Amino acid sequence: MSGHLVAVEINQQQAELLDRLVAAGVGASRSEVIRKGFAGFCDDLMASAEPAE
Amino acid sequence: MTMRLDHVLEPGSGKAVEVRRGEVIRVEQLEGGQCADFNAFNLHDYREFFHTGRTRVLHGLFPTTGDMLWSAPPRERPMFTILADTAGINDISFPRCTGVLFEYAWGYATHTNCQDILAEAEREYGLTPDDVHDSFNLWMNTKVDAETGRLSVERNTSRAGDYVELVAHFDCLVVVSVCGADVFNTSNFSLKPLRLAVRPATDRERTDWLLPETRRFANQRVVEDFKIKEIRAERELSRDPAYVAEWPRFPITTTSVEVELTDDEYRQLDALTSEGSFGETDEDVLRYTFFTWCLGHWMQPRPTWSPDLG
Image (cartoon, rainbow over all chains, first blue to last red; front, side, top):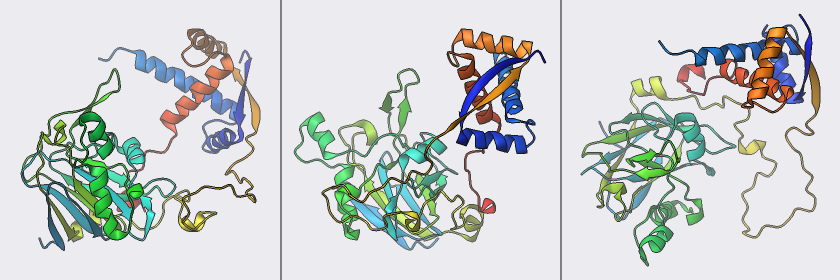
């Protein structure tokens, strides 16, 4: 990975949610969960922009 | 089917009726085209009452068959499920009509209105005009302008014999009024009688629709959870000098998570930040898009309880 670091501030309740997603296997760490969620958001955005058949 | 109660609501009147857990209340058009206002309270604790806001968010602006009527926070639990709705023109956006409305709009010194009719009906159980709450408006044909968000009332299309039936999930006091608005089109500019009836739910209805009495969520508060359990008797408010705030979660602390993005991901983030719809900085956009993704993929579905779910 080329390593563009972006720091995201979250509060303890949001951290709790992230930890649950880590426990659910979404990613190995809070950082990875956020990265995967961002990638998922971009995929969703692309899919919604595609013209309906 | 044998009704435990069978009552005709004449124009200008209302009625408070006890509906026990497992009973079905039916409101029926006798002539058609008449709006009814519906209030409901926990029979054993009137401070728990029907909440239009929670119901609106969970079931939309026009609750119908299969939707539930919810009590207000902090109790926040299903009071009724709508078993049948033959016309499908109910509303949950408009407040009850009031004497003030008819006074300022038309200059009436006295006019039939749901606030006063419901208050008078509820008085039979010791409730006051302050206890009347916004109604579930049966047969109120409303529309929302998608552009402006403004509400309007259309012609009442209900017909004689149309009915709404609701099964009670706990013992309730239901109060129904014949909406008094005859100089608005709510009831097509005339006031007509309605039938109000209560019957036991059938075995099939109990199996298919009746929810367990237990709380599903710890945050559905009951009086035992309250720091102050007594209902105030005084009207005047005064500060409690011994008060010390005990917020449910305080203070809010923050921590920083460093997220490592690939070239491709960073380009996408940069593009979204430049576009500006999701935030002004990379951090804002990353937080906003991540939690938006969570909402779409990880949030629990809205509660649509069935007896099986417990």
